[in-house]
Structure formats: structure tokens, C-alpha cells
Image (cartoon, rainbow, N blue to C red; front, side, top):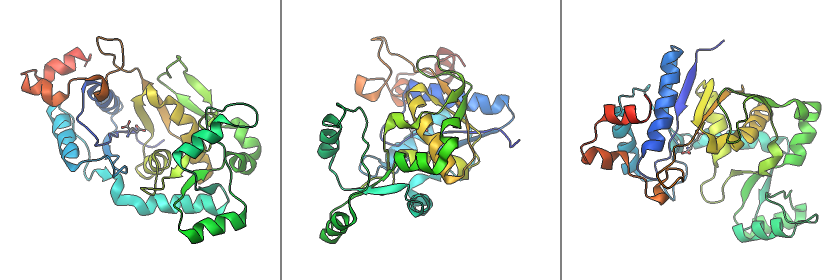
Amino acid sequence: MSRFTTRFAPSPTGLLHQGHAFSALTAYQAAKAAGGRFLLRIEDIDTTRVRPAFEAAICEDLAWLGLEWEEPVRRQSEHMGDYAAAVERLRGRDLAYRCFRTRREVLDAMASAPHGPEEVFRGGALPQAEEAALIAEGKPFAWRLSLDRAREVLGADWDRLSFLEEGAGPDGETGEIRADPGRLGDVVLARKDVGVAYHLAVTVDDALQGVTHVVRGNDLFEAAHIQRLLQALLGLPAQVYRHHRLLLGLDGKRLAKRNGAESLAELRTRGVTAPEVRRELGF
Ligand code: GLU
């Protein structure tokens, strides 16, 4: 059994608030309790939204809270080759296809699906000649995972795919959970604009970093279904999940920047101390 290894993986697109602190402390405490490793990973692939200043602020806030993490920190933007190689492996088995559709076209396709409106997108590759013409035109495309092909490749294993949830999903899902990768549709593996996308990057990184336990908010519970599938398709080890509850604000909504959650930096400026924050969050 490998040594317990978990991570906190923020995206540097804003300042951390108490919801992030709760998540980071939960992961950190789990690592300490298991005599394991705690990693910090900077998920900065969305170059349209990340700002270096936020990365510095994240490190400052976590250190202020009393967390320590291993160096070097993995910064996703520095590992694009790893993600491209994973997409390449999936392509090699026809598990990925080019999607030239715009966001609007994807939504329209979902709305007018043959058996009634769909919540998720299922597309498939275009006929070869059509695709070749679009490539020749220089039309940008994303890479999407083909669920139909994934089912074919996995055969009987498709129905046996599962993951262990030691925390709970938003509806209390816990224990051995049957993976249902179809619920997110043909997810994007590599975005048109930045060349990689969340599920692929996380799956590759968790494997490369030897993560054994994924501790994160239950807003990402659904992601485990598709990430489990990607692990299987790429021949990567499966992680154990510990999804935790989300912190709610006074308005009953989850803490979020867009709902005006106070940042840790603001709390600090108001004179709130790190021990007070930890205590308030139950640590
Ligand atoms: N970067 C993601 C976020 O900021 C977390 C990814 C994960 O924990 O799997 O929500």
C-alpha cells in the first residue's frame, strides 16, 4: 500500500475564502492523521482567468493558516506536455475526437437531441472528409472523450467501474460507488483555447504525483465518475475519494467569490487571527 498522499488543488483565479481554508485544512489534517504527504497543486491551465498574484496570495494564506506542503509545487501550466501525451494516447485508440462546435452549437445540439433535450453533450467525430475540410480551413477544435468508444474499449469492465467514497457526495453517497461516467457526457479533454481541460489534467496529475486520496468539496463529486473512467482508459491507479461538505454563508448559499464571501486576506486585515479561523472551521 502506498503512503497516504493527498493534495489541495486551487485555481489561482481569485483570493481564497473560508470555504477553501476548510478544504485545505481537511486535506492537511487527513494527511497528518495518516502520517502521510500533503501536496499543493496550482491548477492554472485556464490562462484566460489565472493571475500570478493570486498564486502568491494562495501560498501566503495557506502558510498563515499553518499549513506546510512539499516543494516543488506542481504548476499545471508547466506540464502541458504530460496532458498532450495523455490525449495522444486516447486518440491512438480512437477514444478522443475533434469537436469544432462553438459553445452555442453544443447547447443547440443538446436542446435538439433526437430523443428530447439532453443535459449533457454526446457528439462523435465528423465524417472524415468534413473534418479534413475544417482542419484545412484552420477552424479551431477541442478534443472530446467518446463515451461510446470508451464503453466499447472497456467491454464488461464498463459495468464494473467503481470508486471508493470515504466521505460523502451531495446526496450522502458513500462507500463503494458504481461509476456512471455517462452523466457528464463526452467531456472536453483539451479545450480549443488552452489545449487541456480540467478532468484530464487532474487525472494525469493525481497519478503522476502519487495521490492516493482525493479530499475536496462535494461540488466535485460528479467529477469522480468521469475521472474514474479516465483512470481506467489511461491505465492509471484509482484514488480513494473523501468529498466533504461545502461551507454555507449566512444566506444559506455556498461560500463563493460571486456571493461576496470575505477572503482570508480581508479577514486578516480585520484583525482575525489564523487560530480563530481554524477554530471557527472546527480545527
Ligand atoms: N482546481 C479545482 C478547483 O479549484 C479543484 C480540483 C480538484 O480538487 O480535483 O475547484
